Image (cartoon, rainbow, N blue to C red; front, side):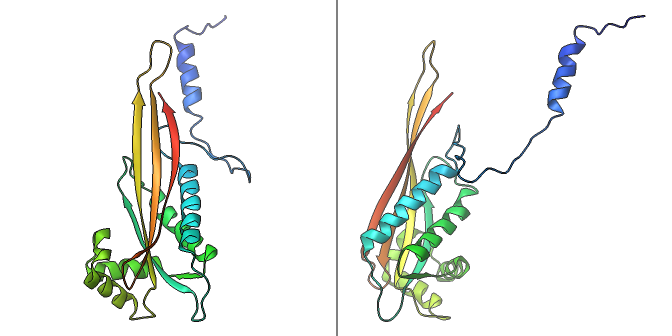
Length: 207
């Protein structure tokens, strides 16, 4: 006797088969292009922003090697003012900026834990606090307890600008977002700006 599969069972069997496949992962080959996010900025956006902006900052500051040794740099952090939360991007961006500073100029960089501890102990919550002499002195004094005080402070801001266009019958809605990273380097003793640069990346999203 021949058994026939009910027509309605075929789509169900197909759905179960596809669903059972689950998610997959693979190791990307060296030099393989990075994935561009379809709704928010991805790794490639911030990798490029950090690289171009940090290199420009060091070049603009024009700080050369000195007899008393490398300049001591405290990276204060990033203030995020854009439409997107950085989430897991932020710690990676901090590492990249610190690494670029160490490798592209006559700098030694304080550890992130030391800077965070000094910020908390000095009561510095806003980036504007750096431009008040007593706050800056307190911050540097705390860092200087275990070693020499910093010569320069570096901090940055991330922003976004968004333009949206509605699609028609045969076109999709389009959103263009400009991502900007601005970095400032200031003299720790005087608060004067030694260098200030901005980098940008523009991404187009369609839905």
